[in-house]
Image 1 (cartoon, rainbow, N blue to C red):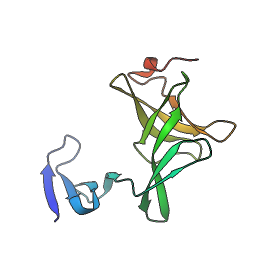
Image 2: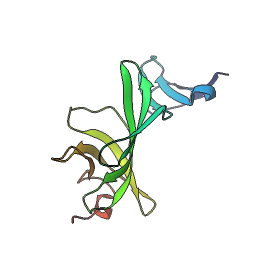
Image 3: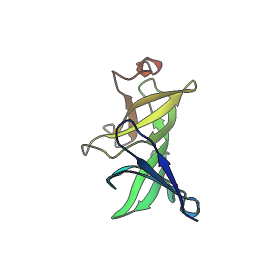
Image 4: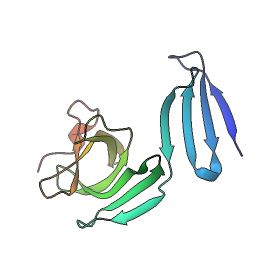
Length: 133
């Protein structure tokens, strides 16, 4: 079943939200039909050599990383990272972790060993919830 919802936006005249429950896919298009945002279900899971669970969505060109369970933060605590957008560089992927019920935005990168780690944006609203070691 396909559902279309029309939403009024301050940035465009109209936004179309397409929901396909069977695929657990949500796609948002603006009035020009340009892709704006997409969230997908975790289609594939694996554990890397560092014990981190990696979740992938099967997408055009192969799997795309959507979450990392057990990602190391600057304060030494392991959390769950969720991807929020496509990376603008090869070395970082935007996303967030939750600390004490609050969202901390930042990016995923790797340390010298190759394990994934999360670094908060210094200008983010809740960046101070993840303190240094």
